[in-house]
Length: 224
Image (cartoon, rainbow, N blue to C red; front, side, top):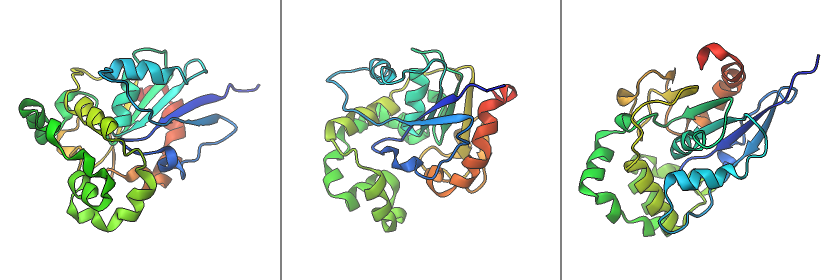
């Protein structure tokens, strides 16, 4: 008896392109991978409106949505507009309560409005502001993966993360998080599947873990 193909849509993180998923492989007899990309937001577009617009690119019924970092927030918002088989959130948060204190403070003070996102053109400086000076040695890596450098997009995206208002986790959502994540520290994360030594970029450098575990996580109704 033939099994239906499960369509899995992958959304990269803030400013990233779908190349971050280049090492992700799912059995072709059971799954079909679709890669989503960021598009520029309209002026004053809400995250919900943006999510609905991205959903227009999904043609299959009942897909699995997989999102990394800000992409994890976005796929949760997308699942409010379309029926999904499952939502998998990686290196991200399920509610505003899991945001780190510095992001909560940024929301209160509105300091996020003054971040020097225009410095994205100077990539070494940008990585220092975004990821910390200890990762400057990875500039070449980020030049490859972080290609969405439009200032309006970055300003919008940062605001959407900092001001996200989700109170409770959505049903049928799986959260995968690394215990060494520096962007969304593990100490604030609740009820996740933990990847040991996983950092914020573990979708790239721990792809073997995902290739081994994603198929079963998608198929197993008990983990939803």
